[in-house]
Amino acid sequence: MTTVMEQPITPFVRELNRLLSNDGNALAPPADVLVDDDGVTVHLDVPGLHADNLEIELENEVLTVRGERPIPYQPENGDKTSWRRIERPFGRFERSLRVPRGLDPDAIEATLHDGVLTLRIPKPEQLKSRRIPIAEAAE
Image (tube, rainbow, N blue to C red; front, side):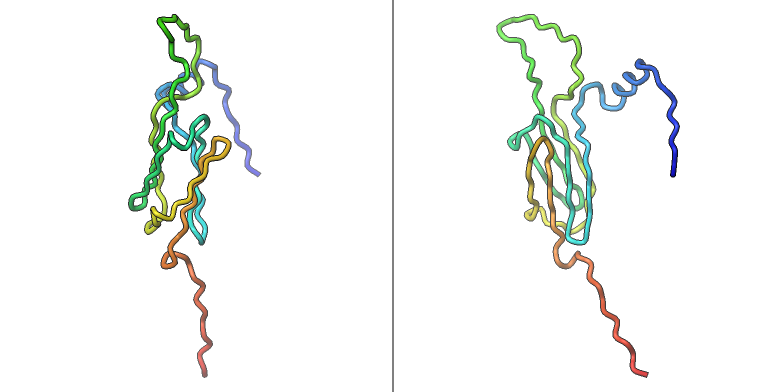
């Protein structure tokens, strides 16, 4: 069993780290990339986005997801809205992930459910691993 000790950090340092890590309010969706014998599955958190806000591209071994989460707070008719704190990320984003070579962009299946974009990309037959039988040599 491994124990990880963390030093307590002040709220100021935590806030500074958040600002420096993603330029304050940039949307940088986290992703899980799972590779098995049959293909690749990618889960990307995109809360608040709809299918028409997303674009998916596969070129060589780079899978790119682009999108935009618009800021919902727009002053209307000269209203003076005072923004006290905006922590949720908004704006355009582009996330590129490396995937195994030789995947077919036309075979991507994409679903969006509860703010999670799931992409399934099957491996073509020539890329799937095969178990090779070994024949016993006659003595």
